[in-house]
Picture 1: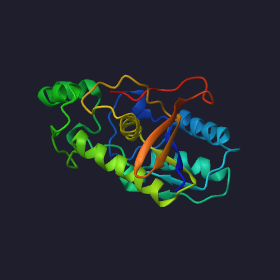
Picture 2: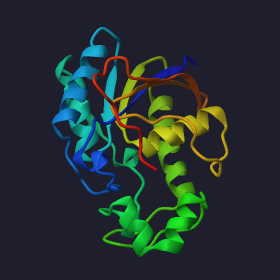
Picture 3: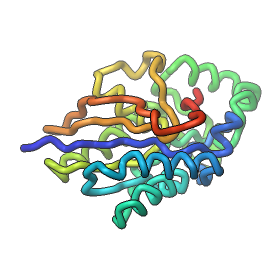
Length: 215
């Protein structure tokens, strides 16, 4: 069986990224800079083979994928399994507000206690382990279904982190010491139900700035 090439792209910038407000499953659109980044990413990939475009159904990812699709007149498939982690009661709050309102839960989150749930809000939060299993399974599912093809998957910072950890066999408890950048291009292969990393964090197509995923 031939490996599947996965081009994994983080969505462009949103206003909430810029102000350190946690999005999770809240459906926030791209800001003007994010729209520019989406177009720049589409231009950077215009000459590359892409057989299928799939995005999270949240609009910040969907709008980024739509920019890519416009350059090649292709449809975009939406997959809610590629959504960001659900943070429950943390969603919609500034990081400083989370620490103030939920000091115990915030400390557990920062300590990477991967099976500790966050408080529920409009939605029930996922633990990091639950989220990791969902995100990695979704990427592998798409890869295994399209052997030998090149897929562009447009998702979120947390999904990118999960893919990176899966490909390199990193423990979920270890701190994240690698960048997860808005509108970055990250390349993987899927073969036999396993992810391997080809390249990470391509942002040369983006100027003047990109934002790291905010912890």
